[in-house]
Amino acid sequence: MNKIIKKFNSNIGEVYLVYIIFGLSISILLKDINLTFFQFSFFETIYFYRIILIFFTLYLFFSFPRKFNLNILLLSLISILFLFNSLYGETIVLENNQNYLINKFNIDPNSFFYNEKFKSLIINLFNIFFPLCVLMFIKLSINFNNFYKISYAFCELFLIVLSIFVTIKLFQLHFKPDQENFYFGIESDFPKNFINPHGLLYILNIYFIQNIIEIYKKKNLKKNLIYIFLIITLFLISGSVIFLGLCFITFLILTLNKSKKLFIYLLPIVFISLFLIIYYILYQSNQDIPGSLYNSIALRIAYIKLFLLDTIDLNYIYGSNIFSKNIYTYPHNFLIDIFICSGFFGLFLIGLLLVKINKIFKNKNLYFSNFVFLIFFQLLLFSLLSGFFFVNIELNILCAIILNLSNFKDEKIT
Image (tube, rainbow, N blue to C red; front, top):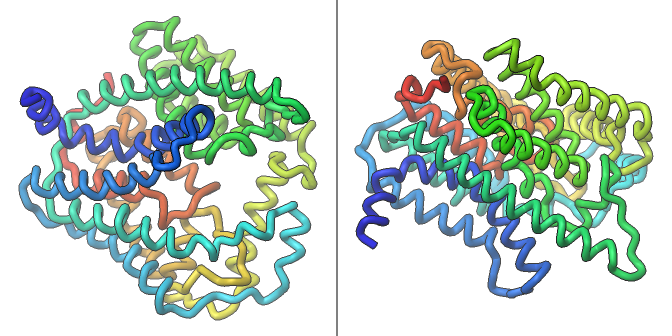
């Protein structure tokens, strides 16, 4: 037991980073398994994840030396503005009736974002703002080789368990009487039968990066090619076209940056991906079909237009209260989220910090050869299309960790 504790303490930075990036997906998978097979009412794994994060962060505070970080203070100011505006700020109001959007895009009018106000504030306060405050006052140290190895082991186990679980559950659903389901492409019924598919599957985007890296290193080629096949299959079954796009972009970046020979070696994946994208656009580009590619793109454009052009009482300087009773959603774009909730001041701060992060990697010549940068790059791209920035634990804390660290030179992938 003492050896385990000693090992944990010696790798606490790496374990914390693994917990931040992979913990939510694992907790969602465990909850889905529980609801499918056991239905233990007390087994709320997502709540456990958030509570453990608080205590883990507190433990981190006493494990590292003290050092103040101004950049993380600037990042925390964005959350402060969000919290303040959500409680005391002027609430934004729609200029026109929003029913046309609800009817046009077949949206459930009962799932209003306003009902998530308390939950969003709690997550931001305890799982984002609190960790930012801790990271602001410590000097973090992470061994990136250990982090990479731990990440690969976690992701490998996750992929195997998830594949088995999805296979069993799909068989159960297939033989369930009086229920027809379709599981392929954007019109897949996967989201109806699995909890939070985006959160459940996101970890696979990261594992895709590692499989490409391992193939580039010529390590376990067959195993990693099989894993890539499984990842793409799960994305196709779930209809996660956004994740297919993320993996495709990451693949192009890695292969073109590393080796033209590798790019040729994996060229079939490129053609398959392009074929699927063209198929989605030509065959399933019906705006009236919920979940179709055209519907998803048009809906996100409509969200942005809604918040930028169709709202009144918007404070452009330091933001407004987004939790309005007559606005059913959030922008689904982290830049618009920040603008609405913290104004131009918040946009200025995040822009300043992204420039700082750019300099960190540029000065150390680690563009696209750094595992952490690729994870952050994927999170940024995904946050431009989905999720709400102020409850995005992974993006906020990973941003703070990057701003905290100074030893990225030790992690260059060879």
